[in-house]
Every structure is written in C-alpha cells, then in structure tokens.
Length: 80
Image (tube, rainbow, N blue to C red; front, side, top):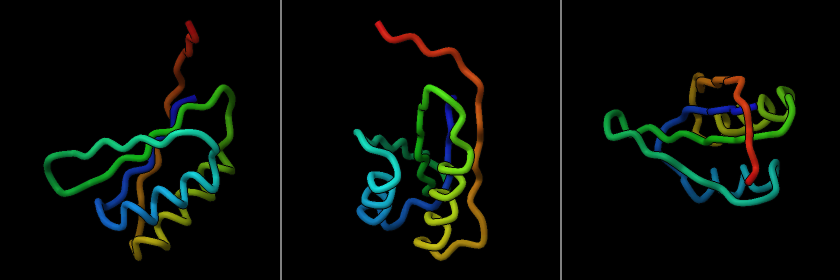
C-alpha cells in the first residue's frame, strides 16, 4: 500500500523525527515547486491505516495546520 501525506514545507527536521518515530527505516521527501508543499510518502506491505492516520494527525498538530491531505493508493510491490 502507498500512502501520501501532503503538508506545508515547514519544520522539516521536526517532520523527519516524527516520521522516524512512527515508521522505522529511511525517510524521503519530495517538494512540489508551487505552494511550498511537502509530501511524506510511505510504502507498506499491508494496510496500516490507523498508523498512517496517527502520523497525519501528528503532522497537522506539529505544523499547526487546519488539515492535511492523506492519499491511500493501492499498488503492487516488487522486491528484486
């Protein structure tokens, strides 16, 4: 499963710490040119909606936002 959390491009260090607390492993960020947005992308072998929503709510609180967008995208994963 692929999850994307869209937030403002602020407090990158705080976001990195937050993501690494919830999900072990590396982190990656993709910045959109317009609007100074930041996307946290998480790829998981199974559905973990509750864990992702907990992270999204923590991101919203950390960045003092009214809302963040969360996308859940079904995908096939291949490990080679």
